[in-house]
Length: 386
Image 1 (cartoon, rainbow, N blue to C red):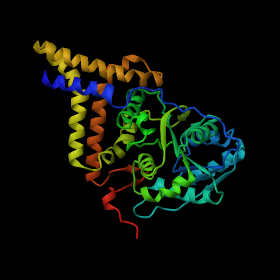
Image 2 (image 1 turned 90 degrees about the vertical axis):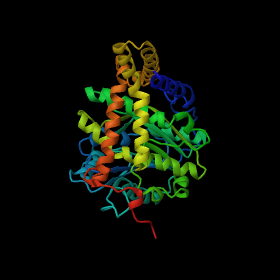
Image 3 (image 1 turned 135 degrees about the horizontal axis):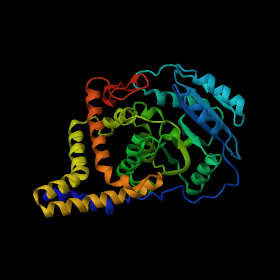
Image 4 (image 1 turned 30 degrees about the vertical axis):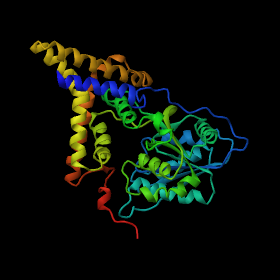
């Protein structure tokens, strides 16, 4: 009964005091088109992305942007012809100029993506852009996406404007796991607080418009070269230097990458979950305990109370479960999913708990943060720059 009461109190605190994380109305802020459109360079790191590139890259090539814009796709050692395919798509679709570069293998202390981003930003600097759009090779943009991002950044005086791309939700496992992924992210980094003064900072790596001067001042990406969760690290570096950051949900920026099996989603989450708790066994234990109290106790209390005749435990657990499901409903609506998935959130949270533990196990086995043939060490294991 007391454990169920603690879970209910935790949910009431989350409902009212965690930046209203459960609301999904944080979209691009009010904006006005500038008199003169600034130059923008789009940087796309890509490694073995031939399967998704035809659905994503053309959306960048045909951007309806009134100012000068150019795309730099950085082929990060692909083995599937990603670079050649990008050139062919550019010939076929026309539109914005495309340059395909290759940085070679990343040196020790760099993640492959950030090494590719560094190379792309280096190529872009010759064009002297005012803004950089960092976007992934699996992200499809509406034709006016770049225009809207720049207008929002200019109107609001933001150094970073980032949109959480709408992830694909088609398979059974995607329906169970994907909306919860964004829900949990918003719970950790409430979008409303990111746009305000304070320490809360985050971005969504699939779509980040970054002012070039702010990138240089924050030493992006060199200062975060070993970050596995690079989007959050980028936003923190910019905000730490006095920059303004905005993050919200996208309306017409979509990920085209499929995650049809649980195994695919498991790898996506587990590769960075232990990094989220700073590779700390103590924080891992606290995270597991917190997930259990907040998400698993309510349904267990209801079942135990009904079986054992403990009405107070069942009522308290039921109320906590009701608040939990209620906060999940807006995210399900945003993803256009049936609302009967809301009561299943404890099951999904249990999966995330297992993924987090597995992330730690893989880390200590030397296979942590593995992605596309590369494995990255924790930050304290990489050499410092001279």
